Amino acid sequence: MSYRVAVVGATGAVGREMMDILEDVEFPVSDIHAVASRKSVGMDVAFGDRMLKCEDLEQFDFSKVDIVLMSAGGEVSRAWSERIGRAGPIVIDNSSAWRMHPEVPLIVPEVNPDAIWDAKKKNIVANPNCSIAQLVVALKPLHDATPIKRVVVSTYQSVSGAGKKGMDELWDQTKGVFVLGPGEPKVFTKQIAFNLIPHIGPFGPDGYTGEEQKMIEELHKILDPSIAITTTCVRVPVFVGHSESVNIEFDGPMEPDEARAILREAEGVQVIDKHEDGGYITPKEAAGEFAVYVSRIRKDPTVDFGLNLWVVSDNLRKGAALNAVQIAQLLDREGVLSPALV
Image 1 (cartoon, rainbow, N blue to C red):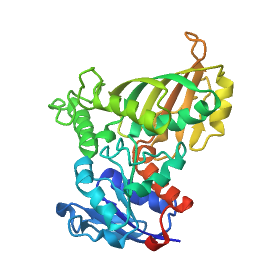
Image 2 (cartoon, rainbow, N blue to C red):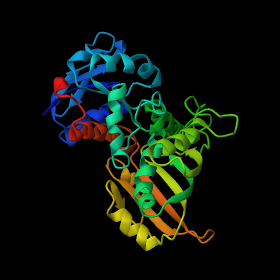
Image 3 (cartoon, helix red, strand yellow):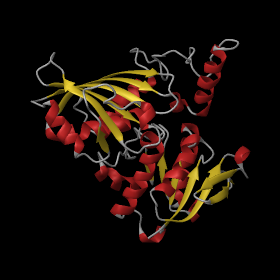
Image 4 (cartoon, rainbow, N blue to C red):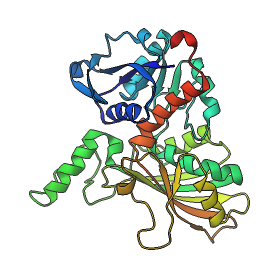
């Protein structure tokens, strides 16, 4: 069985990554369309050894496709996803627009695949926030073994999480530091080159930022609402790859060796954990890879049942494009798409 696919936002960083991953994993595509806003119509987008011409979002007939990978931002998704779903295809949306909607499943296939059947309620599936996707892949197998009471997370998020403009700002400022000065920040609130910014998203009345609040809400929807979680999200001068320092408090005993053994068998996880120089993963090694990497597994002696982890993944892949394609694979594997659509 093969599928007719449209990628909306195909000229963006995540959209292009979606096209690459569809080809990499050999997703059964019978026909594919690159779709974007009017200003991008006619642009070339690669799919394997083919070049596709971008088609106009406002003129595209979505009834002729089965799956739509949406990566055009929340505003576009709010305007179009329901309309596209009513035309027949299932929309897999990468924005935050639908994540907390009660009739839209928020899915990480390694964590809550059974939720995929809720996709038929509105023909929309939400892709999670990039920082939470890698976190729940690491937490799920541990939580299944011994329930997690509380998680404290500090993120170190790359500028690609803010799109191409964020990457360009880091590049330009880094060059500028050595020539005429870094220039005034435009994408970020402060200089990002050679700096860290503990601020991603707007501040709420409780002092938490939008990114921090997303992590809390999405962990509860995807994994378990009973887990207490507090977060601090930091933008760092790294082009690709999000890292997380994770402190976990369990309900009962969980030794580091036990956690290593569990995580080594977990789907989507790779454990790189040697307590020696270089025996851990950094964003540089994770860039371009599919896995969620876990390192620095060690006991937290300040609580009865605590562990610390270091979790790293490519945010453009597992945090966005890869997870969206894995949702499409899940739709295929579980037979959620009706025969009339394929």
